[in-house]
Amino acid sequence: MAKYPQDLKYTNDHEWAKIEGKTATIGITFHAQDALGEVVFVELPAVGKTLKKGDTFGVVESIKAVSDLYSPISGKVVATNSSLADNPGLTNTDSYGDAWMVKIEMDNPSEASELLSPEDYTKLVDSL
Image (tube, rainbow, N blue to C red; front, top):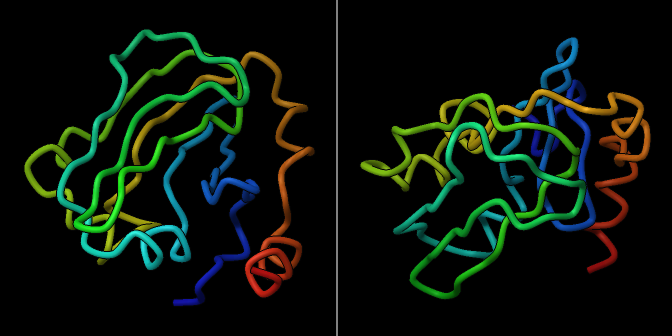
């Protein structure tokens, strides 16, 4: 699998978003999990929480660091990935699949156009 799948959008803070209709599935990128190292804890918001673009929606803790998670989209949390509570290491092994974090029903789907393309995100990571 590519480090940065083509069907996703990305943020400067290293979250990804998969846009499907009015729903955005959110997780952290390969680069983020690689920089964090072994993830040992993930804290996610309650279903029903309303987020504005840029709001902190959770925390990822690794053996190296603690990092806030930022919402790339405004809307209401409609699902969280409860399997990460028991298996936070999924974040390291399947960051674009089983380790999705939240699903957000978007208030303003046009916000997705402000996110980075895979090519732009690759340039960002390469510049770090």
